[in-house]
Length: 443
Image (cartoon, rainbow, N blue to C red; front, side, top):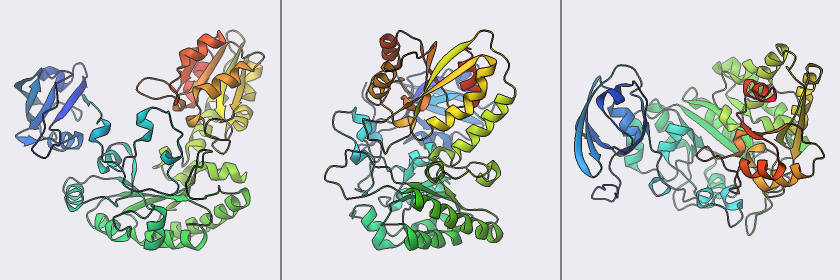
């Protein structure tokens, strides 16, 4: 059945993907596949409308079920109705019209699955999932909706506050690239903002970075964090602007500079405000800040403090490690950026009967400058593991390397393909200390 559409062609309503047992939605009779068109007479455009209008205790749902109209009454019994909605399809996502000089999607080679070439710039996905948006394509209706529905926090790709420089970084888009007026408007509306700067050496570093940080600081606490992440460059940069990666000396200088800003902001604002990606500390060979310095890890998913949080958890878990019931040798797949460090952390397990061998897999597909496990392809992993003399009893793959929906790698190879070729069990493991240690034990 084709989705019902409004006069302007926008899909109406939201589709129910799952209903949790013994929830208010289940008690009312809501089913997977139902299209909820309205709540208490208010038409729904998307999942945000569903959340916004379902806050009342008594709800009247207008549905489309198997092509026929239907209605249900739901009485809220808890904060969560127990409904999981179908994610938007690619054609329902607002895409990015910018051509950022550092855009990772432009650096993908041909032949990958279509979803890997979708550039979203959708404020709804920013609110719901923490995706970063530029704000450059937002019209007045979208800005008004953000203010009306208090869609906070939003994650904003700032990169530079100098209008001319930002316009250049975004690839000279058709819309003005002046970011500060929009950030000030959102701040006045009480919207919390997490700002991101993709640092491109020789473009928005040095004095330009300082200007951007000092322009954003007066907007705190509305601008809650400023995340500085290094540009990622693949070997497929064909007919794209010339860029270079951050060097080790530059990373060390950047850390020193940011630590000075953090001390100043902590004294004046009560927050360090500016946070560096873990990758910058690893590149510099500098110790990661203590957990308290990350102020609750609000942007950990942007690679800010993930290593610190993982290693702190791992240290606690290793302190409680008990002897294994039987000796095991397990191979753990990792990227070049973190692999050697992980192996050092797991070395103390060998005396208790657990030998954790870390397979540091070079990224031949995207290029050696990409060192994170989340961008390893199945074929690169397969090729590297096939060369190992003794991979042990089992192979562990970090869950960040596979797609959540169907568990395949970026090149559509599956862990089951690796298991068949290796003749060994291959397990996908969540990147937490507890999950890793359980998997090492074979639990």
